Image (cartoon, rainbow over all chains, first blue to last red; front, side, top):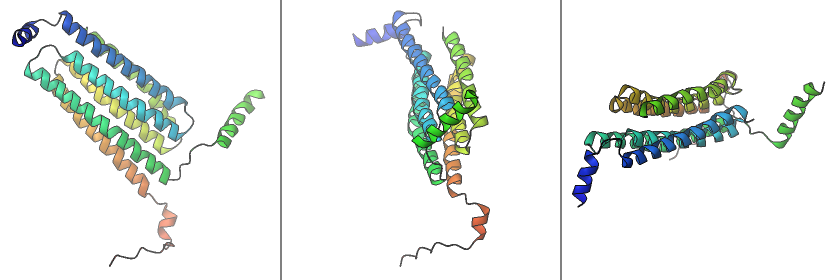
Length: 139
Length: 105
């Protein structure tokens, strides 16, 4: 019974409803990853401080890359042959690698910045910056 | 459908890289620039997979993406260690004020 189902699924073309569902899940994951990368880009431009920018870049970059690569791995699947399983395995290997290394490099960069006496912004600095931004426009 | 998904995704990734490029160019500190380079390098791995989809050679381009992710990680770690050890030149010529740690017997 299971072999019969597997053989029919394997001989189905890529336009069958089952594969359409898998491809739709892949496209949805890629789109959600794109939204997270939009958050990273906006955060890296608008945040006032190095540490807050690192917050945006570290989190958004990791999650968006994982979602996009996973979505592409699902979109790439078209049959149950060995090569396509190997491809999915390789893409999941990249996802695992990025899941481990991007937070590590963010942590190393943050530590280097902190030991290099890069201080985070406090409330007084924010107030000063707000005043200096308001000053020229008030004139 | 697959080709159009890849094309739209790659184009929007390239467009969204522009703000990060802005941060690399005008970043106040060097760490901002390294962070931007790191983000763009991670996204380049994704773009390599997309290019592989467009050329129908994903099995080859996935290996490129693995190598690029590895190089990106090593670059970030090396640069952070370099900044960690950097000492200004004036302090390097001065005699050390800190007492040296005694070697363990």
